[in-house]
Image 1: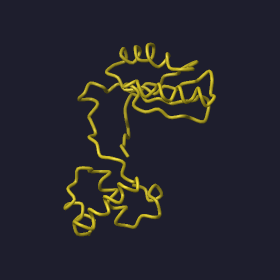
Image 2: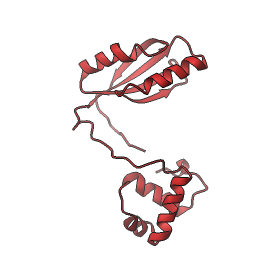
Image 3: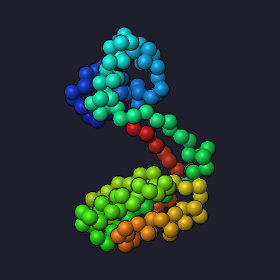
Image 4: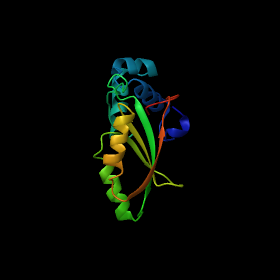
Length: 156
């Protein structure tokens, strides 16, 4: 983890806790404590504090999309016909209901949003684009970029 990403309010133990849990969120507290050089109780207290202060927002399983048959990735540039706050809010709410949208980013540039779409194949993507994405509130146009290979895909 880059030091510039971690708040300067964190000491070296906190930073090492975050780095270790980012890599292995299921690491037992005893192993984590040993790895960072603290005893179990102070380490456990630090993890709880990091959670309560919002540095750690949860723990989850990272699934293998290929095993699930979801290895087709497309990035979609979305242009809206209306960019008022109400229109943006309507779009933001609507994307939450489409499971194929893995990520949605508002962009400053030539288009308004960039979506990461994950489907089983190109035909499933075409259906998702035609039936779901094109029907999102205020969508005036899209442009698709299909990923040929993920060269780096870190989960922060």
